[in-house]
Image 1 (tube, rainbow, N blue to C red):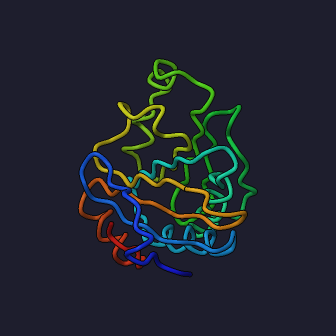
Image 2: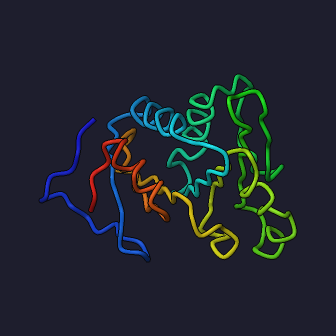
Length: 172
């Protein structure tokens, strides 16, 4: 794991002006990061996950699920929209909203998942931004090389900012 120097700094600030970055050199690094993040989560956690096609969103979700103790095979919910896993320490709701409109997403009743006793991870979350709860951790996976990624987090709420600090992410 390598952190950015000041010379490598890029502006990742979101709408609230706060962002953190963690640099991964490999898929294994990214997976370990996702597992560590999962261990911090409690009921009602919402992770909004974005990144280009092939950035590793589903692989991130798989590692995250492993960190929650999910033993089932976690696959992309692209065509099913929501997959529920109940065998971890918390229920895990894996969502992929790439193929649906904002109106269709609104009809799914996502707030019931977001406000429930589980952990929600939404791939392509920026597509349904108005439906996301105000407190959440927004993560973007940015491709920096064949297997390297910048994991950019924009915490919305102090508990999520504290997690970023605990994970050793650098504020930018």
